[in-house]
Image (cartoon, rainbow, N blue to C red):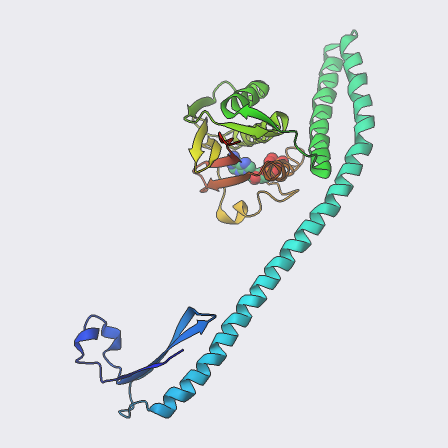
Length: 315
Ligand code: ADP
């Protein structure tokens, strides 16, 4: 590109009177940095002390320097793109391998687990002392918890493709709420704000799995809140429909937000969470052509959103 020379001094120049920082400039060289027709930056050299103005040979040297600067910027960009895509590749390879291990472990645990559950249920029906009954209840509860983790592992490992049918979104939300209603403690207020009657192409079971995860996480987050509240929203968002679960729980910071959707990431005590919930959900959303979003500020609750493409009249 062409370079520009300004011969000052600028101290009295009317054009620059609002830019105090330029008052000391006696002469300047300005060189737009261009790459394939676009401007990627501007290089500017100001001479402040020497009374000698820049000349033609300075301008030539400056434009040669500018060519090197453009190369350096383009190289840096390329390097960044490369390292980004490599990081991505490694991550997806890792998740694939993890998925296979997870599925096989889950499968091997599933059989003994079913046996334990069945035996405990049999025991439950026989004559027991109160103490024994308590122990059996404990076995049932904990085995049930294991079964949930195994289910998560299986879904994570398999990533079964969704079977899509037209589903009204609000009905999916209500149905998910019904499935989890026993987990909702009495003091928790549930508010519904449904302003979209959209229909989506969805695997109802899988979408409900996402919503139940959102709600279950939200319930855990508000567990020690003073006036625990969950708000469920269905609303339009461009050509998508947005399903939100907001809570007034402990929330999270930006550093944590970046890790939320990674497999096995959890901040919960051992036994409380596998850290697979949201990563499984993100996979399901992607398989539906949608995505998940999460926003929060520490101490100010959190909002998790599921975005799904709406069914248009054109189909
Ligand atoms: P898990 O629930 O097993 O820990 P998830 O993938 O569902 O796994 O969630 C990962 C982490 O995201 C949780 O451990 C928690 O730190 C955070 N999280 C999820 N939902 C919320 C929420 N509503 N408020 C605050 N933190 C949340």
